Amino acid sequence: MEQKIEFKPDLIKRYDKAGPRYTSYPTANLFNDSFSYEDYRSAAERSNREAVPKPLSLYFHIPFCDTVCFYCACNKIVTKRRDRATPYLKHLYREIEMQADLYENSRPVDQLHWGGGTPTFLSHEQMRSLMDKTGQHFSLMDDDTGEYSIEIDPREITPDGVHFLRDIGFNRISLGIQDFDPKVQKAVNRIQSEEITFAAINAARVARFKSVSVDLIYGLPFQTVDSFLLTLDKIMEVSPDRLSVFNYAHLPTLFMPQRRINEEDLPSAAEKLEILQAVIGYLTDQGYVYVGMDHFARPDDELVLAQDKGMLHRNFQGYSTHADCDMVAMGVTAISQVDNIYCQNVRDEDTYYQMIDEGRLPLMRGMKLTGDDLLRRDLITQLICNFKLDIKQFTGKYEIDFAHYFKDEIAQLKIMQEDGLLQIDQHTITILPPGRLLIRNICMTFDAYLKNKQKNQFSKVI
Image: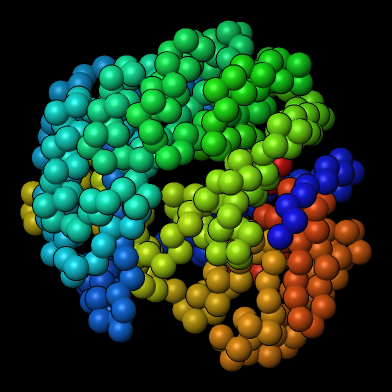
């Protein structure tokens, strides 16, 4: 597929409304507390009974942060006390045991991810112990072919620590930068020097990590086109494999730390669009490919190659080349996706500890997907990942009359077609270069739940 993107400000302004990011469909705000352990156990049993059981994807949520970044919308525990990780890991180990009991041990772990919070809040001893415990109960791959990734904070790790992560099995690393401008860093309480950032990236290169990814945010206080391009200039010195350039969504009523950001210091909507346009032009000139949903990667990156083949996938961990995995997520707030269900763990430490001490998995809520949910999830995933849907293949898979089933949606797509976002005929839906930035809008057309959702639960699409 020829991967291009066209920036059309008038279209973007017209379509720039709030909407889901579709790391799942249905989205997590639809999960309900009537979901039970039995629902989850049954899903795990069904997944084990498949003719060829899927590999597993394991996610571990390490919620601790030493300091709070004011823009952050993650589930986290801000503390200076490193000893708080000790009881957390004790209970996490028990959850690993309980989860592993539900799955056939022969199922390989194709994907592993530690997120946060700040996973590098843990000591080396604790990180090794967690990896060892995981390997005792799940079939970790020992040939470095799995996609084993960790989020790091360069302020929390030394170059030797990066090599340590490679030694215990990680082969992909991601780190937050957001912006190198000192004024921006001070405004969002993320003081991070170029020196320590590049030391971590260079160490990852020496340690032969397969992929190094960096995160940036546009729309933060005091940012301008020129200042953001200076940050990109500096980042290009170390040539990351992937960049995620996220839109800052200022939602202080939902995320308390954001209340410490002065709204008057934020760039206007017009300035944000200018920054985005400059970023797209800059990175494409540097040879990066727009994968979708704020993500850029080098042409030889696995994500780009998978997208070329129409095999890119998306889940709670973001874009992935591992489509056929059941995701088992552990730790507070972690969300699992197994067979036809989603389920999420409890949010707070005390409840998490209590339920595990009682011998119960710490499930809080979840959702059993209907046939229509599964169908629409597949469709949205194909569009948001690969910018294309083969209608004939899709209708054959689900045995539906596409034109009848999606009569209302097709009428909405015709308007988008007239705007140049996509091309639709009886055989194919193809997202055109101007539509790739607005892929969330296109996917929202197929969201059966969106009419009843509160739009302020989501960020703007741009």
